[in-house]
Length: 304
Image 1 (cartoon, rainbow, N blue to C red):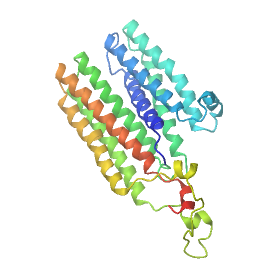
Image 2: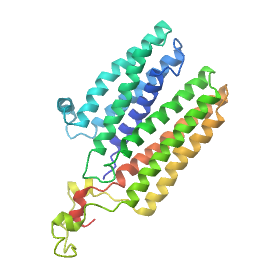
Image 3: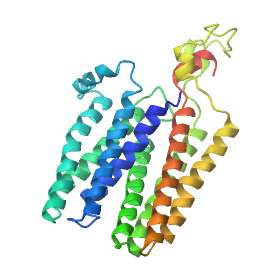
């Protein structure tokens, strides 16, 4: 599949924002502080930037509002509806915790649940597609949720360090979340590499019962939408190299930096910030591979 930059930034930025919103909703940061209010602002900014980025992938962005009408059957529509509902809930919780100095646990729990549900719907847009075998697994929403939780945890560590409230248990918990998220991703990669393709040239043409099927010539002499969008391929050696880069940037560095950030002061803030940057770079690499390595069933008709 063609890895569109708009979708990559949409899924990564909004995931990071919803992860932070979930952490804030659960009361990770102290209420009534300006830094906590700024954390809510960052979460909403990341969510908004991600959602706006997603519209760039539409052929007619001015018709994006029509996506909300199919919420009964479309995961894309459900995602949009939950995003519209969740945004003001997160914003209201942020303002109330700042203005009153109290946690408002029920509203915070609602914000966290809406954040998790929106990320789940985003993941199910891809996991529900049987035509893309690599995506059609429970590991897809598990990875999306795990990356959102880990990214939100790292951002929460940054603000805890800023507030001088960073403690060892919080650091260890977030480091474990980062490790678990990439563990799920490695399981996702292992599944994709080991499972045989359900769709082949023989099944695509319906001639498999006759014998071995090979293409005499391609269906089209020139490229078209299907070959450009569905037939994107990345060399195995490049994919392997990028996986290692994603693991080093997204797992190894954030894990070490998070462990080293325990404490207070400018050094702790700097290390926590670097952990967030490294994690995001790793997730962007992972998300590019998520699309680039996926094979759509239609490519079987083209001999892939």
